[in-house]
Image 1 (cartoon, rainbow, N blue to C red):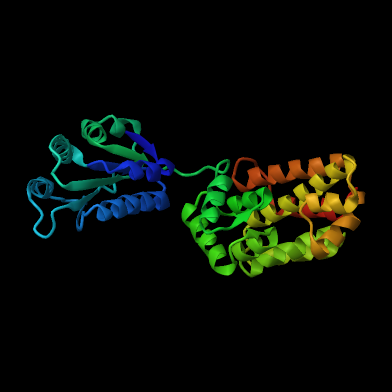
Image 2 (tube, rainbow, N blue to C red; image 1 turned 60 degrees about the horizontal axis):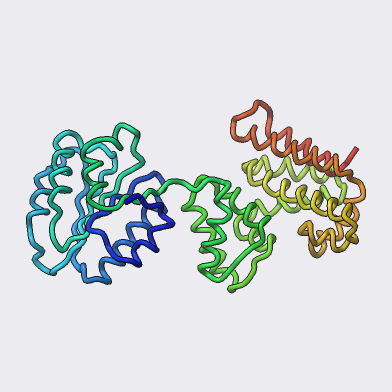
Amino acid sequence: MQLRAAQLSQHLARGLDPLYVITGDEALLALEAVDAIRTKARAEGHDEREVLTVESGFNWSQLRASGASLSLFASRRILEIRIPTGKPGVEGGNALEAFAADLPPDTVTLVTLPKLDKRAAQAGWYQALAGAGSVVEVYPVDLEHLPRWIAERLARQQQGADTATLQFLAEQVEGNLLAAHQEIQKLGLLYPPRQLTFDEVSEAVLNVSRFDVFQLGDAMLAGDAARAARILDALEAEGEKPVPLLGVLAWMIRGLNKAKLALNRGLDMSAALREGGFWGERQNLARRALPKFSSEALAAALKHAAEIDRMSKGLKAGDVWDELLQLALRIAKPG
């Protein structure tokens, strides 16, 4: 049976298989999958645990001996076979095929592997393991699906956030689910169970020096181009990474664009600014700034931000910091 990591909990609620193969290159999901299976197994009386790690020079007779031996301390056990390289070799492949053909009784076996290439996934030893139990695939969550993944994790600790805030958080932790997990846990420690605001999430996720990113945004809204340029220079000198900076600026520009569209639909200024996500003093800054922009200018600024994002990822040539300055100035001093 093929399972995604998100399906494992429902699967385990129906019962345990005798063997699980956890494969993929997302460390956090792999750890969680193994832990979930262990927890279920222990709840069903598998009290003994044995771990075999396949490293250079590993003696595969240990696997044969383990499969043939009975537990000395408990009637049921968990056997973990870790193959960090995903390449057991000829001897190992034969040993794994033999093991899968005759699984030990009263044992739940966990085989952990990295993401396998097509050739390895078609090897006889892997097919034998997959046929003897369930395969749990633990692959990275892409940016498109990451906001929903974060929302589900927040919900477990009875917290939530709006779409824009989830998108911002996703952009900060893209490509590193362990970092995402840690930031979500931090939010659970910092704030009580409730809906979180953008400012609360951003202040928690970004470090102290990064909090000046919002001072940059406020200078832009205030039309203070000189101050915006000084703040940007200081952030670059402090070693600030451009991607988090861009994330905050893009959030602010999207907010202005949403507010402008709301005005065009006939909402009053206060309602439009709330729809754009502006509150408190920042709402007052946005109130003064918004009439300076046309819808076309804000759309062009968003397109500019997308181009900078491509530069930051090496997909387009250009000086990211210079383009950030140009983006800041086009908001601080709209033409």
